[in-house]
Each structure stands twice: as structure tokens, then as C-alpha cells.
Image (cartoon, rainbow, N blue to C red; front, side, top):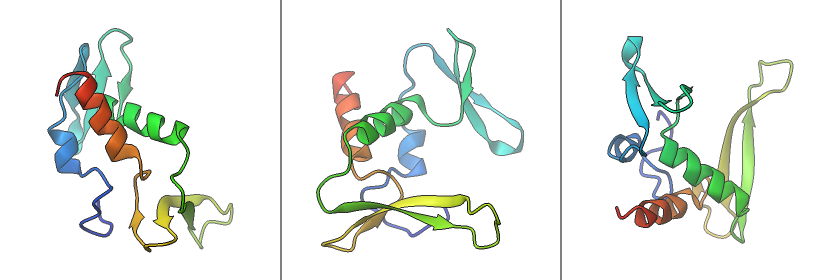
Amino acid sequence: MAHQEAQTLDVSDEEVNHLPLPLGYVLVQVAGGGKLFRDNESGMDVEEHPLLDRAITMAESMGLPEGWLQLANYDPYDPSGAIQEVFYKNESSGETCWDHPLTRQCLSDLLGSIGM
């Protein structure tokens, strides 16, 4: 990510690269160095690692911890006013992160539930 470095709540690309794949998923390398995760059962390809995607969904369903805000950056040159990026900020500490503040904990819980 080209954003601020050393975000302790954010899950790094390197960490994602070391996550195990759930049963039935394979990693597919695509042109230009990209990658997709293919669910062999459904045949669907997704860009986000399946475990990280589940952790994000879990975190978002829990809402934000007390004191955290969800904020957005807008592209000033986009006449539609589309959101460019979403990020989170703790009002008390000033800490910011790109991932939902509970994503890392949810990912840890998921890994624990599969014995990792």
C-alpha cells in the first residue's frame, strides 16, 4: 500500500501473503504480477484473500469500537463526489488506519478457529 507506514491495526500485504488458503481455494497469478483467489467450487475469482475478506465482513458487522470514526477522502476532481478512500480514526488517540479497527482481531480469531 502506498499509504502511511507502520499502521499497527492494518493487515499488511506481507501478512496477507502468508495467510493459508481455505480448503477449495487456489491462488491464480495474472498478467502484470497480480493475483486472484479462485474458489474451485463456485469457479468465482476474488481479489481479496478469502480469510481477510471474512475478517473484514466480521469486523464491519460488529460496528466500530467506542471512540472510532469512519471517514472518507473524496476526489476533488470527480464531479460525482465519489469516495476515493475510506479510513478510520480514533478520536481520543488520533490513531488512524485503513482497515476497520477490528479486522486484525477478527482475522486472528478466524486463524485460531482453524488451528493456525
